[in-house]
Amino acid sequence: MDTIDEAIAAMDRRIERALDTGDPRGYFTCVYRSVTARVRDGIRAGEFDDCERMERFDVAFARLYLDAADGFEAGGAVSRSWRVVFDAPPSALAVQHVIAGMNAHINLDLGLAAASVQHGEAVADLRDDFERLNDVLAAMIDRMQDALTHTAPWTGILDTWGGRVDELVSGWSIEYARGRAWSFAERLAVAEDGERQSLVASRDERVAAIGEGILNPPLPVQWLTALVAPRERADLRAVVESLVD
Image (tube, rainbow, N blue to C red):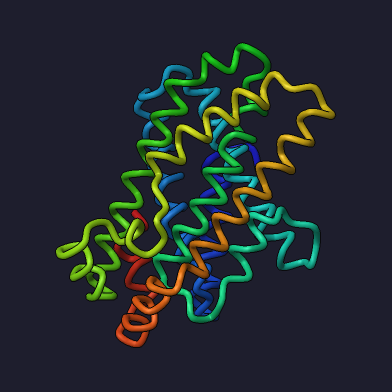
């Protein structure tokens, strides 16, 4: 997989399988596919400082998710951060699946991808395009919430009375995550091999713990999700139609 188009094609195949089987992990794939398509369109429009580097960056980023998904399904080794996502409890809401996936992909994978395409102190040259990618991720979360409002109407009620669905259900914030992801990328880019392995392992542990909290939240939030779960009518195909261009 060397191009964004190839990454999108791989995600399309995953979405089709999720539609066939009713796999709720398809919610994250659907949202992330929209992110990747938006980045591809931005590259074609020359929106990034270095469009050739941005494609390498985005392909490296996508590969980390796709390899994790393939590895999990094959019974292979997978980071703890992604294993938590793929082992989500059956009671998890659609929004929890999406935010848990975003947590693993932003808090762990984004820094790994950045450090793999821009090494050493030169990683600073990637900062502006890194932030542009984060802007796309944030916009897609908002778009995902709009899609779920139509397929799972309770999310609209929560937005009206309490604020963002992702923060209500999980306490997770992309604004906080993006700063932490860049700090992680900076440390990785200048680390020696031994230190790099230690940094990744430590980061993976912390990100997995956050994922556990998203999918198995404290009791007050569990009561909220238990209340709304029977009312959730989140239809994967409807979300796909809303998000996939």
